[in-house]
Length: 119
Image 1 (tube, rainbow, N blue to C red):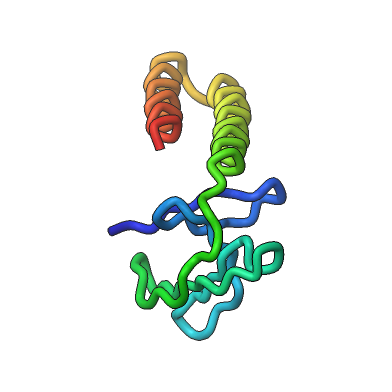
Image 2 (tube, rainbow, N blue to C red):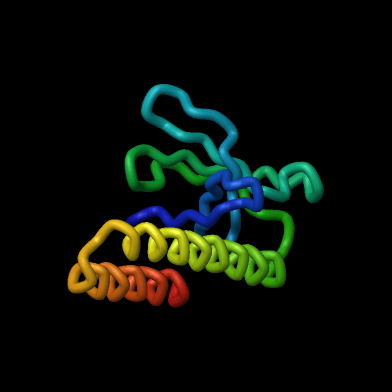
């Protein structure tokens, strides 16, 4: 199963797993260690280890409920960044590509943004 990521307001990647959000703690060789984003505020001890594109180890249980409001805000923010990127790409495409190629590229951008909106 592919790992799913969202982005913080500063642009840092966060791991989204089973509805909970994890922030990167450290990277050692090929393993990435993640801790619950509520590790400080809730003293949550849930942690995850990933390697390549899969979860290797899941340690600890969350001591708090899912924060749906926070996740919805993060999704909207991520989508707005993607829309902004789309506008920037569109500008580049219009200035660089032939009109027939530009239509294909716009279609591809729209498809990607539609996929992101679903997730």
